[in-house]
Length: 130
Image (cartoon, rainbow, N blue to C red; front, side):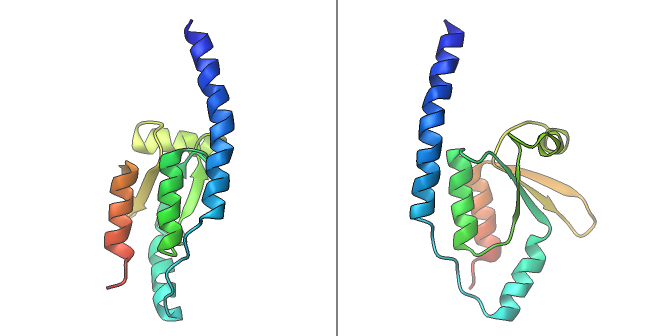
């Protein structure tokens, strides 16, 4: 019986995933407008951030929307379809769970942050203009 349930959920995901992506594209938030110097400073800071994701994961979509809203240039890596990214996520973060934000500090050490709400809170705290 379990294989039948798995196929059912795969089928549901095959239908719902593209619908979520389409809705996301239609309702994409506008990015914050910063002056050129401020945006360059933000871009420099975001070079040390990488988000591991699955394209149709609702929590990843939610996190990507906030990244767009904050006008952040954060590299995203598909941990579902790109085996090397999946392996990096497993080795560095310890589990295949998305979204996951890899934060690299000035010394090159990595912190792996899971949970969309934690990632969004971190990004808002760090990058929302005051």
